[in-house]
Length: 288
Image 1 (cartoon, rainbow, N blue to C red):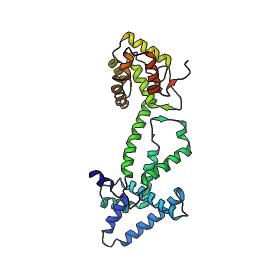
Image 2 (image 1 turned 135 degrees about the horizontal axis):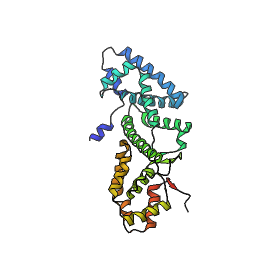
Image 3 (image 1 turned 90 degrees about the vertical axis):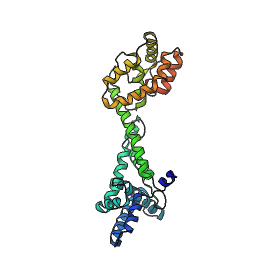
Image 4 (image 1 turned 120 degrees about the horizontal axis):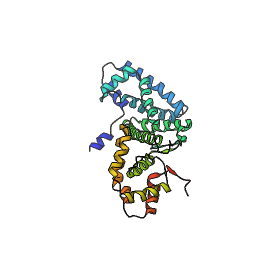
C-alpha cells in the first residue's frame, strides 16, 4: 500500500499550482505563471519536439512540467514551500535549475568505462536529450517519479566516477610506467591491482597479460604469501578516498578468484576466468 501511495505522487509543479489555487486572489499570479510556462513550452518544442504540431507542443508541455518540477526539488518538501520557491525565482529560472541538473548528470559516467566515443559532442547532446525525456516527461494527470529516478541515477553515476578515478590513479602508478590508453575499463583495472597485490611484491599492477597471470599463479603457489598483508601494502600506498573501493573488491575476491588461485585448480582454467571476468579489456592482447 505504501508503494502505491508513493507512486501516485503528482509532479512538484502540479502540486504547487494546486497550492496556488487555494490562495485568495490568486488569479493574477496564476496568469503570470501560466504565461511564463507557456513561453518555456514553446521554446522546448522548438528545440526538442515540434513547435508546429499539437502533439509536439503537448510533449513539450510535459517536458516543461517535469523539468520545472526537477528544479523545484531543491525547495523544502511541501507544496507551499515549492510554490513560494517558484514564485520567488520565476518559472524560467527554476526550469534552468532542472535542466542544469540534467546536464550535470549527463557529464557523469553511466558505466565504469571510458571511451573516446563518450567525448563526441553529438553523443553528449544525445545523452542530455535522452535524460531530459526520461526524467522530465510529466503528464499532469499521471504519477511522476523523475526526481526519485534522478537521485538514484546520480548515486550510481557518482559511484562509477569514483571507480574511474580510482582506476586512473592505479594506471598512473602502474609499476612499469603509466598506462595511457584512452579507453578505460575501471572495474578491470581495480581487479588486476587487487589480484596481483596478493603476491606482496609491493608493485601496483594496472595492466596484465597471460604470461604475467601464469607467473603470478606459479609464484604465489610456491611462496604461499600472506594475502591480507599484501593487500594492506597496496592500501597504504593509495589515497584514502579510494581505499573503500579496494576493500570492497578484496572482500569479494578473497573467497572467489583468490581462493582458486591459491588452490590446486588447473592454471589454464584460472587464466581463462581472470581474462574473461576480471581483466576485461585491460590485458595485453599482444601476448601469444
